Image 1 (cartoon, rainbow, N blue to C red):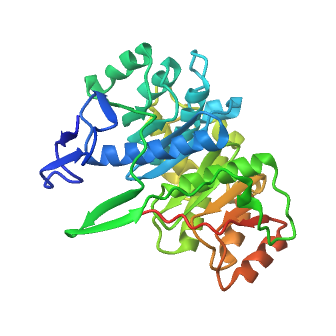
Image 2 (tube, rainbow, N blue to C red):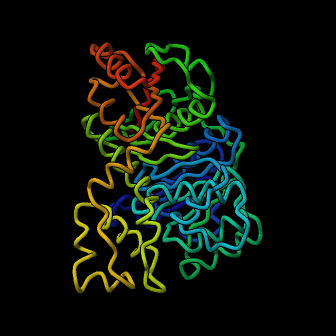
Length: 393
C-alpha cells in the first residue's frame, strides 16, 4: 500500500488528507480503527522514540504521546508497590511483563496529560499490556506486533473503533526528509544523532564528576525523549521513567518550571496522605486523577469544601498543607535532568534542584556557562556538556 486516505487533516476543515510514500510501500498496517492525521503524527514520532530507547537501554520501552509531544516515556523496569498503586494497576491480576511495566510507567507519570493518548511500544503488545490499555482513555497504539490475545482485547475497545497500527520494525527512512509550510518545501538531513554512547559524559565541567550507571541511563532516556518533544523542552527522569516533561515553551526557565512542577506532582502522589485518601466506591479513574490533582494543589478546597468532598470521599480528608508538601518534595533525590539546548542562566538549575535533580545533561555553549556551572557546584550537582542540540519542530 503506497497511500492511505484520511478523514481529514489536523482539523475537520482541512481536506483532502492522506499519508503516502513517494517510493516503496507504507511501512505500517492498520489492524483496527481509522487513525487520523494527528494520530499518525503521534504514532510515528512515538515509535521512533521507543525504538531509540530500546536501542539505548536494551529494555522494553513505551511512550504516551499527545499532540506531537510525549506526555510520558519509560523503560520496562519492575514497579514497586507504591508505583503500582499510584498508577492504578495494583488490582491487575495478570503478571506485568516488561512491556506492560513500561507502558504503566509511561502512562502513570503524568496521567492527566496522558488522557486520550496515542501509545507507542518498542516490543510486541501482549495480553498484559492490552489489558492495561483497555482500561484507559486512549486513541490508539502502534507496535511492531500484537499477540492474538492482545489484538482481540484491543479490537473490543471503544466499541470496536480503537486504532491499532502495526509498523515494520525493519523500516528505515531516507536520510533526507521534507516538509511543506505555506507551499514552501523544507529539506534537511534526518536527526540521526547517536545518544547511546558514554561520550555524552566526557565533558564534565562541574566539581562533581560522578555519574552512576543508573544516572547515565536516565539521562539517555531524558535526551532521547527530548529528541521527539516540541522545543523548547526539558525532561526530568527518575528510575527509568520521565516524571516531568516540559514542551514547546518559548522561555527555557518556564519550561524547566513546568516540567519541575510535573515532577513534583508525580512525587506528591506518593505522599501518605494521598496514598490513603478514602475514595468512594467505583470512582472513575479520570475523576480520581482530577481530584488528586486538585487535592495537592492550592485549589484543594474545590474538592474539600462541604458539599464537594462527599462526591469523592467517604470521609473528609485532612488538608495536605504547603509545609507538608515542601517537606515531602525535599525528600525526592537522584533525579536526572536533560535539556534540548543549553541553559542560558543558573536559575534553571536553582529550579531543578528544588525537584531533587542531582544529574544534568545539556548542550553547553551559553555565554553564561560559568554561572550555570557555579550553580551546579553550589548544590554538588554533576553536569555534562554533551555538545548536542536536540531541537524538534
